Image (cartoon, rainbow, N blue to C red; front, side, top):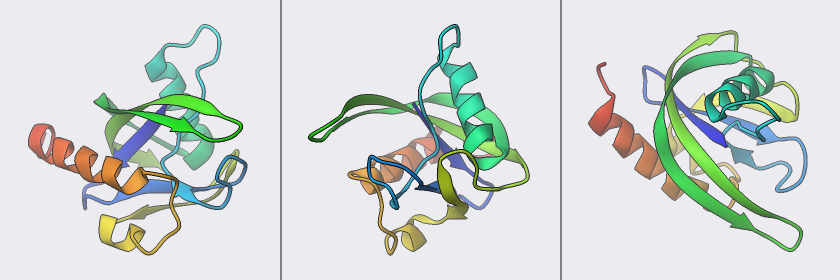
Length: 131
């Protein structure tokens, strides 16, 4: 699963992947669910581990399927807002920063990321902005 964390300026938290698949590309923080965890517990843990931040976890934004020669993942991306903590790259992230969608367009991103973020930001604006 992944966290589409949006700050008060409608920038989105991105990490630079430190490992395969798609090492060196920018994406949202996330990871696997460990035995005994709920999805929300896993998402909160992964967010802190990869970025040092916690957040208010909101609703499911998108289901993404990623397939390459070695992997087949089904990824549940959740909206989040109200970041708190000190931003830092951790765990398998080489860098972490908040970026606008326009800024992100000049970065190498994981396959299919931009359309997902565009839809998620529209969903956030429609359902959660100002709450």
